[in-house]
Image 1 (cartoon, helix red, strand yellow):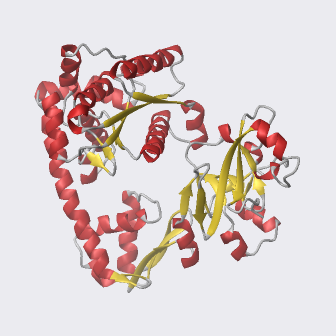
Image 2 (tube, rainbow, N blue to C red; image 1 turned 120 degrees about the vertical axis):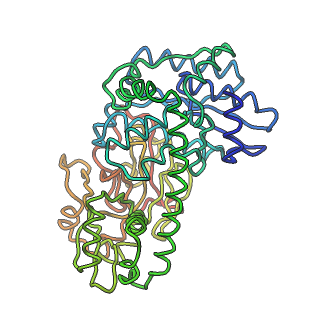
Length: 455
């Protein structure tokens, strides 16, 4: 396994001397093998190695035991460990997504947070076996060539040194190096789609082709090469077709179907939208015949048979749809030409300060209730808010109408939001859902950089 992993590292130029690397450590065989492998080359490449573990709050005592195991394993290897406790089940309900997807979002959010703090790369223990499951999963959902690309060996600052190593190789490596690991009991149930593929589908395919991992690995690599060519061609097409107010329909109509579809995906990505196949087909009809359609939440595609464009109601709103910045307590942030400082304090300091600082309560949130994924931004269609002390939830559109705010003022207000759930509004205050309560221990106070609360 070590030789395969090292070849993968060199093949994709994953690591350079002096790198800092954070390993996502679950305690399972894959992640333990990855951490052990990186530690084994740490001295030669002058690497700083860290690990992150997430207790998802799903498996009770078993999860707590896994956490203690990772602490012991990291101590044995001389690696600093960062641990996050999360309530994935309740968080998934809040976001309206599956626990599997929610767990993934929480993991990567935690990894990225620590990556920024340490200026480090993120190493995940995805294997060739995981890639097989991903490709099969994508195929069952009707994915195109992008789905065949599988799990990328490198994506931004995320590296996957084990992506060409099979699970059998890893288990052998653990046995040879006397590496202990834990087994997540949820991996043995058929509740999750990936588990069904791993337990029921993959064994049958391996009877047909014992080298299934290597075969799918090659398929993914060739698909990535093809997809890269299509994407680069689509980018050139958009550059050639670009006009001040959109894209020349004549240029788009003359393109290959695969290139056209990818061009649409690139445009939609600017508005944080991943278009479905039906959207792309409808957009194609608009390009050829003219017309308009709403793709999602106030984002429109339109064509007058000469110019095609995607926009967020108005050009002014389009600019604001793209502008957002993640909450970073203690750092002065600039958005929409306004400086915001979100200060984290303890409850005792808050109680002392609220006696002398006007509006402190109205602009303070219970930090430990704030969802992991949140950003400062301006309003978007579908946003909702629970005004403090009013025991109601309203759309921002209705709230702003009741307050008789002008359209210009509405577009200028800064929000702190998690998806469509608005936690705080400039000049209005905090949502009742995230207010200070007798149980609050940590407080987030949102202020101007000058020190005055936003008014």
